Length: 282
Image (cartoon, rainbow, N blue to C red; front, side, top):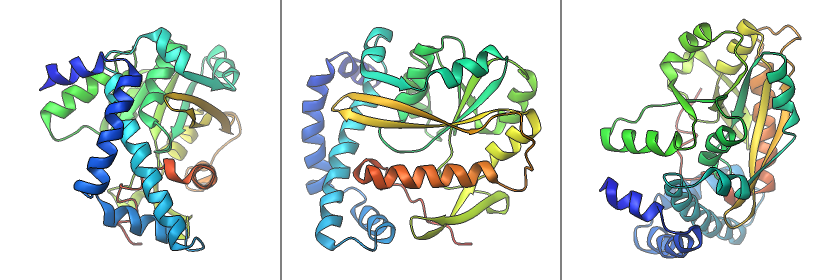
């Protein structure tokens, strides 16, 4: 199975996008992949939109998601040169300035655009300085395969449970530690709740705690699709790493939630609407 997937990954991306056209039809009209979840999330997030617009966004989501699937597969064989050609980074100097000062940067992203290309692109632009926190998968096959994809361009992955240990071990090392911070938390006693897309929503608070404990600057990264197969990562500073932070105030997490909400509204079809983001209640 893995050899088949690796063989597909070697196909040119335009060919994979043609396969994505068929995958879109399969998910949308044959499998009805998580259709109820997608529609419920869209209706609850955009109560002001008419049903016709909701249905248009639903179609847009499935087309985008099909592209993301084949683009993730392409990570197994993409070259650094092709990654640079397909992904630009705006405000790159924000990372470089903090690296020059010897700081570990927390880079917070979300499931907008092709989120899986953020860390591999960072590894191309910042060799040896791109680390990422991730949730290990339960399936051994997919765990091994996704590790191979995510580290192909040189990124290093840290299981979520080992984040604090890794921060202590590499304290003061200039690097970027990427986290997808819009996932649905498991331990709700350690989460921050805020209004997000008209819904009471829990967020992980790890960024606030790590930034306060280690004096880390925090950058928000959003990946915007320019056209099919081409993206721009836009970087904004949420915390400079020098102003004292109260880890219980959740200033960073609140700013992150507002940025993600803004960017979802700007590109609503490009969010991961099939994710059960609102499965928990306060």
